Length: 188
Image 1 (cartoon, helix red, strand yellow):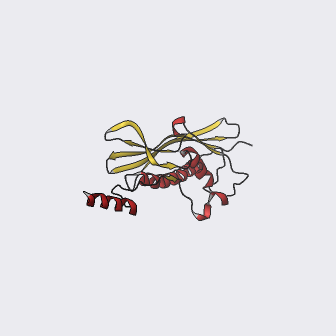
Image 2: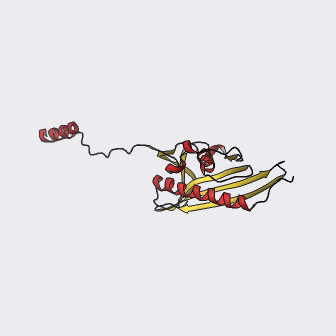
Image 3: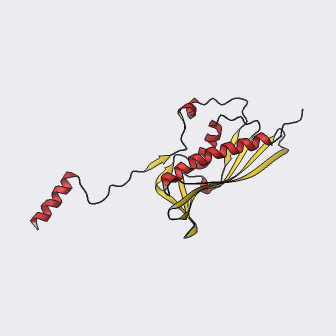
């Protein structure tokens, strides 16, 4: 008995533990390359405003996921991983930092921004939004719904962050390509 107590005291004193050390919490964004960090971006005075709107439930910094294979109606959150800001703010910042030229005001109405698990070891990131562009007197309006998804490299928070980093950049390209096909120039 004395031997067991002695061994336990030595383990405690040395900092060793039979319990795993908890993983520290992490805060994420979509990442920026050195060449287009937000502090280095000069927004053109001719650039039209880009705004991202979202329902209240997307106005926090949780990284959301669903287990489609067991409880598809339950929205869950990662407890140790969060966005640095709400997804609509991060997406708006990415749109504005993209270096793309937006000749008309663009409004993005974000409806879905979550990771979805099809099985325990297979997940995807999903993003649904409507892009709206208006011209001059706001009488001309074009809109398009986008339903984007991308498989996650890993079925966890790290995979969700990595997937959303790629998916949001794809979304910027798809929005720009669609806006470029629209002819909403105001008549002279």
